[in-house]
Length: 527
Image 1 (tube, rainbow, N blue to C red):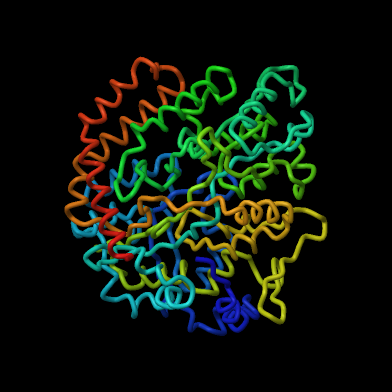
Image 2 (cartoon, one colour):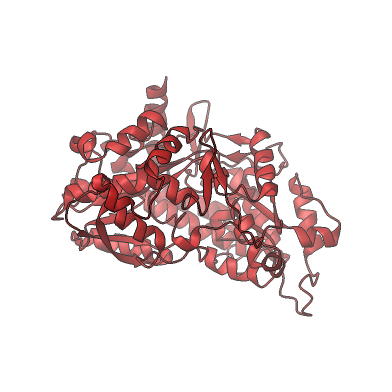
């Protein structure tokens, strides 16, 4: 759902006219009369484009003045955070007032075991900004955080389904040197990759160029849509046809896609480290002028483009250009809509001595319009102004450098936030080429909603029992074999049938039945 920030902006005009003395002149924004310390366990950014969360950053200093709450941070690397969360929840003990889980089912399990506070009975009193955001900006916001029994075990943000997509990004200098255009079909894409192979684009006399890479194998699913698959980031590996759910993990379309990916790998086109690659490693490759095509979130065409030699010399230039979905052999051409429920969900420790304050602080961080504006656009008078209609006008640096608020700790994506089309556009207005290209993708009507609902706040007990029984085994084996089929460690021609048999033995039928239950329930509720 696309909404403007006009209501938020109007409030910001009243509350943010002069911040330096704001906390002293208007302690009504304070959440406690005496400075109080809370502790937060979270992960650092998904890549090194953002500074590590700390109280040395201006945004967090500003928020402390605004709320009168001091935060002590327990920050873990994004790469390790899944293990950190699992260990903490398995122990049944938390040593911080709040913990970011970004996982609804994990929050439900911890809440039902007594580890987290149920915010639902206190929502209006403790989280008034969330109530207002739900009423004025996104009527599904609170629903996205609510479990099937009505409990709310944490507060999170939301991500609009039509922004921030993982897309295919092409090195503009490489395209220019080849005299090539951005491909629109899978055949054109394959031909472009083959043209790029073996060319010494960085001129160092070494065959170190990587034609195609991503932050991991999951990113390649963006190409898999050309084969009629829907799986994408936070969607499932299931699809529905005429109301019947089936698993894409063992489908003919998946086999066809994996065969294609293996061909790219065998020809030396696909990054040889694709199975272990991360966003950070990919950014390092790009910074060495080594990458022709990468698959990642659209905004990184800008941020990663600036890492290149050309990008450092011309940070406002277009060094990677956005590509739309590829037309596949059977006529499929689409990106699947991204829609995260309760993004960045953060829970409050039921043993905290400051439960109410912790919830109020989270509500302020995530939903207070003044904080949303600061996180999105920086500081008024320095990074932006508001015109007579309350619209944001960014203040560009006089030296021609990039408009950037990340050095303040603003825009940090490792804690709950709202990501809407308007906010994305506000933060990218300096990049007119990016806006034009992103709008072109949006306007081409190439996005489809996943056929199996993915924005499901919580599962019923029956659904969850089936997922607990088989989901992990099936998913893990699929990822293992997907990587092996791509790299040739497993022969898809001779081992595919055995793979399907093993998936069935691990409980794929029950896994599919669980998603059929979800599909039937959600579609009935929406009817």
